[in-house]
Length: 195
Length: 291
Image 1 (spheres, each protein chain N blue to C red):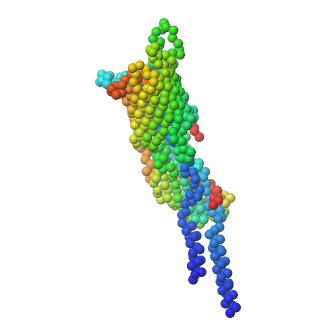
Image 2: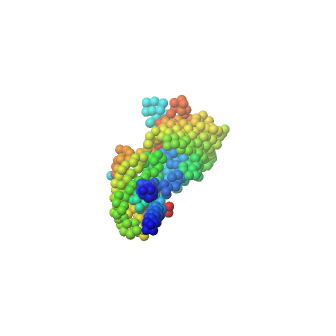
Image 3: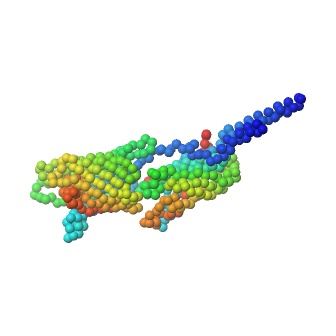
């Protein structure tokens, strides 16, 4: 009689302990999300007679280290060119930033489990997701690097795109000035996101 | 069994978190940042008069304007193309909101210089402002020989001045409109009863037809102090933009290329068909690094 009651108590206690453990897993907010609003993105177009570059210093990037979800948001008007007129043409005639103010990438680090976010080091990663520029969304896959330093991730990557894939048209007269193939360099050191 | 279901239910929130969440929403707030409206007009001139646009800091704008003779002067004059007057000028952007310029017109061998300043700029987003306010002040200098050398002629008689306040707004990607009350003062006028002061209202409009071509209208009805026998200058034309050049091709009843000249010396009537072909050519050079 006494033995059975003891077993029931044990089961109940075990159950309560399990529930508490499960709840604690769902509610823990460890440093698992990182972000920046000052990420840097630059791009280069090497035309036959002209090389065009622009820099952006206010890119938003968010990374969830637990799931590997990584997202970027770029305000197109934030790209800075050396020539004022070039910047105006970029916005008015090419990316049409009044119509499409932001470009975005929403994706996933495919091999996120290979990255140890608590251990300093350089981790080669593969990223897959949806890139939206000029209102056109495409699935892309690209290589990148996550560098962990002091527990903070630094995302870096080089991406090559074709402007025509995103319906950005270069008129015939400018074919020698602007290359349809553009190289984009991403450099985003991140801080923990306090949620 | 019930315990099993409860345990499973506790794991469902964790499973949902594994789906892609909108991380960006958790950090975004600058979706509606203030930004200045650009490219209301493709050029710093509507056609004849100044537009609300500026050329940018460290930028030099080389401008060549041509005005031909009246088209209705017939085939012998090659529809006016045989007679051309020209203005060559340089505009320089000292800051994003301050431009200075000089020029010389073949008509009256007249030099002109101006200062253009923008105290208020149209902006969108947070704290937006609906229009741009631009002030232009200019001076003209006629360097022709005196008609009568025997008379006591004063240097100051060669001078003219103009001041205008431009109120402009880019209404949409395709349409911009500006109003510019303008004041012109001529130190010396031809007739004793002529007004030295003339008031006009500049009306400039642009309709963008494609990414690189726009239709432009530049009209200055005279409000007061009209010079005798002069008409209101009206120009209509197209702006064509290619890379660093802007070509403005237009028809106008006025041959003057600075404010004093086209407001006080337009003798042809647009509506009677006394119009002339002309073009503005503008090429910008970036002289100094912005960043």
